[in-house]
Image (cartoon, rainbow, N blue to C red; front, side, top):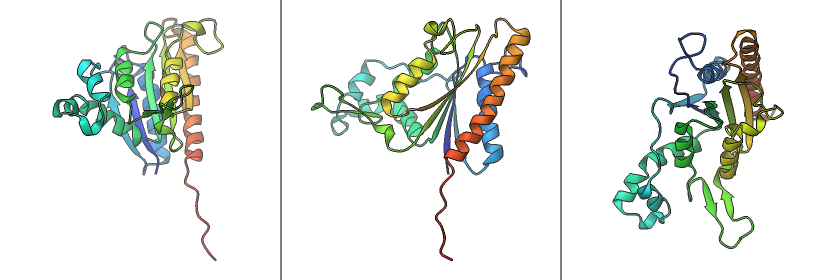
Length: 233
């Protein structure tokens, strides 16, 4: 059965349309997971609210421990990597990674960047082949089909790939680069724009994004449906 890892990175704790100053990215993530479970209640979900409980920022001890061979690590090194190990284990177990994230100052929230730094790990999510200097990196999460769903919210408009401000959007491109580096290349993007504008423009963007979420849930469930082995007559 498919397993979902759902991350919320918004600093806003509530849901747009239900709570004052609620989060549109959280609303999209909640819609995705609720629609998924309505159709497939047997599937499991791990939820992590990194917006309200950010991962630790990597430091000197983390770097020293991460680049020390596992069999040579001292106890303090294992302690330094304990949080990272947990986050990596959650990611490795997932078939679908759902990331709800707002565009903050042209990039991802600091909490989401901290999560990326914790899960891009030598020996766990990526390996290094010293004999291949042209392309030395080996993505370890390419071992089976995994999907990533980026559900974004933007205050302005025109930040889509074909928009006038696409060159200023470093949220989805950065996530796609980092996830592809470790082997997650099936990436789906849905975004709400115009929160700062409001009115009919925002309402239309929200309605369009919610419809896209519903369609994507149906699409992914078809793709991840286990093939049935024909039974002998």
